[in-house]
Length: 207
Ligand SMILES: C[S@@+](CC[C@H](N)C(=O)[O-])C[C@H]1O[C@@H](n2cnc3c(N)ncnc32)[C@H](O)[C@@H]1O
Image 1 (cartoon, rainbow, N blue to C red):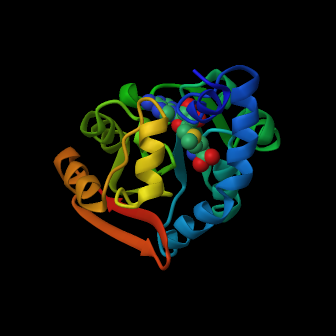
Image 2: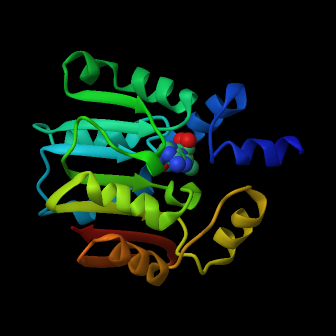
């Protein structure tokens, strides 16, 4: 595998030096999109948050600023992501507000549950068996809890489709596909938001 392909494959599961570099790139590069996605949380209350596929932990840090009273558990199956997210959120971890765990979303069953908010930024493309994973998220949420999904691709744009071909194990989804799987997994109310001139997609589901 060429270096370029190898580097972009680090988005799926960051490993080694290239993985560390990719995590820094994602922490910087996903900022505007995650801010836009989080804007749809206006009016959503949260006291116990689970940030899934947390990567380098930037969105976890932002969520803790947005919800200053809330506790947050950040989860990723990559040890490199867990290390970076732990370093970035070291202050909140020492203060007892934040926990970072190495876990696979498909096996999610956390002692910190039930959560009233779960979030997933740029990660569901890699989750194995979306219905099972969304089911695990649903099981870890309170009744009335929310699940926020934010994707840089709406599953229709040519750029998203191009990355799907370049990155092994990546699947991009349309809002209809995500909605159907969320409903099958136990979510009752699903709202989708798209962005003018960009293929960004936010989905907010309520259990
Ligand atoms: C493209 S990165 C996005 C990271 C971060 N959310 C962001 O927006 O910068 C995808 C992350 O999801 C994690 N991930 C992928 N599949 C996962 C799974 N099944 N369980 C836990 N983490 C997963 C990867 O290890 C990686 O850190």
